Length: 142
Image 1: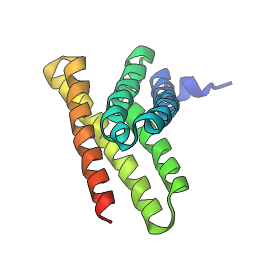
Image 2 (image 1 turned 60 degrees about the vertical axis):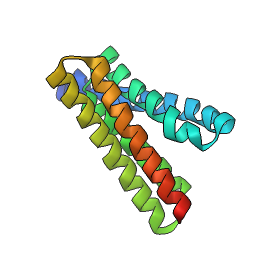
Image 3 (image 1 turned 90 degrees about the vertical axis):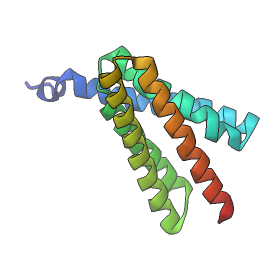
């Protein structure tokens, strides 16, 4: 019998698990933060917790950082499509997938080139904060 983990390698399984765990933990914490602190939680707190979870779980489980981020982005994309209506639902889903994939690439790039995990995650957090600030500002204008 061929096991899936042997077919695809444990690294892929652990990468997917990392992204799913990050999505689960982030959803719980971000929901609480949103209720207590409002939209500022989305702009400032969510990027910190999400980037820490996505990369942290990948490193702890031996998964790939980029695939962990992509998995998280897919989960958030489905959530955004579920919560929104009409064309906006698909744009929100696409933006979630694309942005979290980019955050993963940024994290991996800087970890590889700078040799510093904390700095790599920190740069991704700053980019994520800028992204969320921009999205929230545009949303208020609509």
